[in-house]
Length: 638
Image 1 (cartoon, helix red, strand yellow):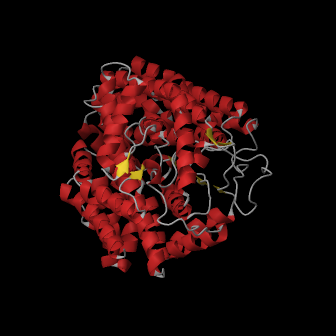
Image 2 (cartoon, rainbow, N blue to C red; image 1 turned 90 degrees about the vertical axis):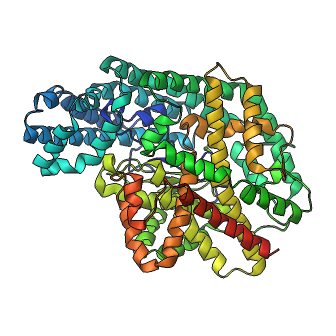
Image 3 (cartoon, rainbow, N blue to C red; image 1 turned 180 degrees about the horizontal axis):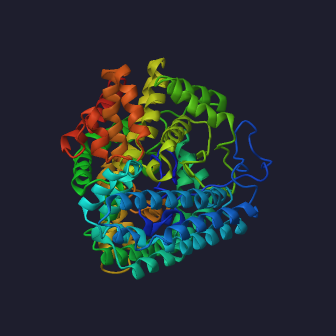
């Protein structure tokens, strides 16, 4: 559930890996491995723009030494120990549907209570690390809590293993016999889906207990990127600062930032490649033992999406490269007076004029006014995040780049992180993350287990929120402003659809190559250039040094094969926006039901009321056609 960005907004649409695994054998495993991250403020930095909000996490804990952290972990451990006492009961009750139904409800309830108690502390540690990546006390807290959670949760390993020894008809009878057990049907559905990939209890315990050590490779990757500095003239830029300059209206500024960042990535590439290789090998071993047919198979299972649907989407997008990215970048090169764009000009503004900057209060009004188009409830839920210290928007040294919304647990409120610089894309980033946050609050009544939404649907609210803001901005724009807005929208879509499918194909080729042994930096570079060249087309020049730019894409380390969810969400939202255009009043209640359902329905079932079939390649072609229509509109203004 925790949604995060490790790239500037133009590079990727956010989110995040799910914060909780759905089966007992991997209790809080994503937290243990360090998927989401964030951090509280104990002091206000002296160099901040006072208009930009920063977090105050004292409603979670007063600080890393708060004794309540240990108390909550002890409470969570108590629930897990109670859960452990039920071992063997499920099989012994298989002839008694009512008894089995009561046991299912009891086990799920204990599991969720443990998630809520321990999840708050784990979220605090990961939130704490976001804006203070170089703080050793916070890093130690995050590492120690992950190790403790791993050991504690090992007592719940038996649960999914034992439940999966039951036949489907036995579980169905139990659910029919006990009404309150019915609510856990989606949780059981997810547990049952893992049956073909389960290991013995001993091996599952080994996998779980070694997860914190494996997670240190992710930590190494993150901390390396945080310490990275791009030398640009006399300046030493952070990753976020260097990436932000790629959107500068001045070509010399973009080129200098790209050059400095290239050298920094090249210098750190051996360490980043080692982390990527090691985690890929770890995944390879686990996938082999679990009998997954392909590296992406476990992600598809977690997303409750079939391979055919993902392949249909990826193929539809790849077949549209020429009509979309190749065509647009050729138009942009013409506007900028070039035959080819250097790679650092890909997200350049169309003119060298100083671009409009949005103040925080102005951005807030734009987002809330846009949300209000979907009904007052959507705006009110977003308003709370501005009224409380639940948004951290101020960029500063030591803070991670990017943006995300972290749900924490269902009995607590989410937190939103971004690095607000005032440009148009940051207004859309704010809308995106608040879309996630609103989605998360709508799911909260379901509880932590059922609120967790598969990635195939998790990006829906965030990208839809961006679409609302875009419509709001373009409605009263002049012809020249409309051209700039359309260009920005097209580029965002290309980054979240074309670019993310290219990332997906990079991962496919990298993991396939890793089967033959460690992939060297030159090999990784070659794969990167090949897939990015295919997606960007002849109008983009992949200058010397660009081969190292895979190294800052943290998704490859944090959540392998995560990235296709961005394209899935963006193209899905294109269809939803069309449905809304056709019937605005009828759309809103269906949309709220979709978001409020969290993870209770598989994506095909959740989208059925809208008449959508994501398994059909034509469905994805429709989304690509909508993007092509934006390019048509842009070209007509030239």
